[in-house]
Amino acid sequence: MKMFFEYLLSHKKSITLWAVFSAVFAIVFSLYKLPAAAVFYSVLICFFIGTVCIAADFKGYREKRLTLRRLLDEIAVTTDNLPQPQTAEEADYQSLIKTLFDFKQSLANEMNEKYADMADYYTLWAHQIKTPIAAMRLSLQGAETPQSRELSEDLQRIEQYVEMVLCYLRLDSESSDFLIKKYDLDGIIRQAVRKFSSQFIRRKIKLVYEPVGVTVLTDEKWLLFVLEQVLSNALKYTKSGEIEITLEEPKTVCIRDTGIGIAPEDINRIFEKGYTGYNGRTDKKASGIGLYLCRQICGKLGHKITAQSRVGEGTEIRIDLSETEIEIE
Image (cartoon, rainbow, N blue to C red):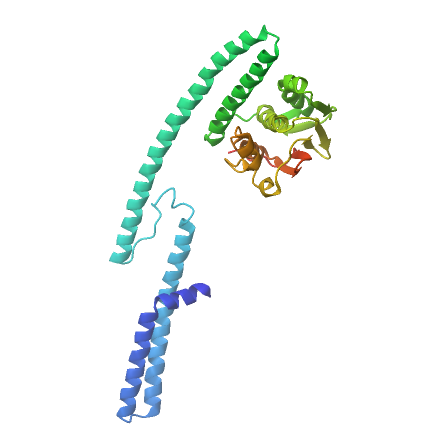
């Protein structure tokens, strides 16, 4: 019914003109004092003919509208299935659409080529920079001084930023290296904790963790990246106290810290790309990318990550690892 009213509105000039002509005929017939029946029948015949014409025209209008609606999803890919133009005006519009489509395709191809070149460059850069990082780490292994330990932690942050670059590039690529299968969750958690063990010891932050004894359907490398990012943030904003890793039924990993917490106005935006909030503006080292990547990864793995926090009391990050549908393109 809505489409019919839209049809009437789009043809209001023709319908108005038909009504005016019918009225003119009726007035002329009445001025010549023709029988009322003759006037009535002539108007009725005109109405019938007009109704038949409108019904036939509306049928074609409806079919064309339905065809155009079906084309909405594929018009971004091809213009080959556009309906046959019925008028010169429609042909001009379709020619315009095809010209704009070809121009958009050329721009998209150009942008894809530029992005591919940029991604290749930064991927190469990230892999090349790992060589001097490894050399510096070897140089620091022999020295056991407070300064060397601080330098080792700074070097670890550099490694983490390099991994973030690679992760960012891989997430935006058309192909991914996901390897989904059953993994021992404790094994992944221990890897993440082991990476930051020196920071726990040097800063005297207590780690509360008991083996959870469950297996999860995930990708080990990508889930490990998420856990490392969460632990890194917990350590960054916890000056003293403890960090606790627990499991809530059925399979939700909870990482709680006793750090500075997150402001209420920031808590709903910490997973946004580039958002650092009050803590990030104070710390000056936050990039606003880590938690954004965590949410993107969890979304692709079918997991869910959420946060709760109270200023001055700490933050809790919850990662739901329940076996849900995994969205991998």
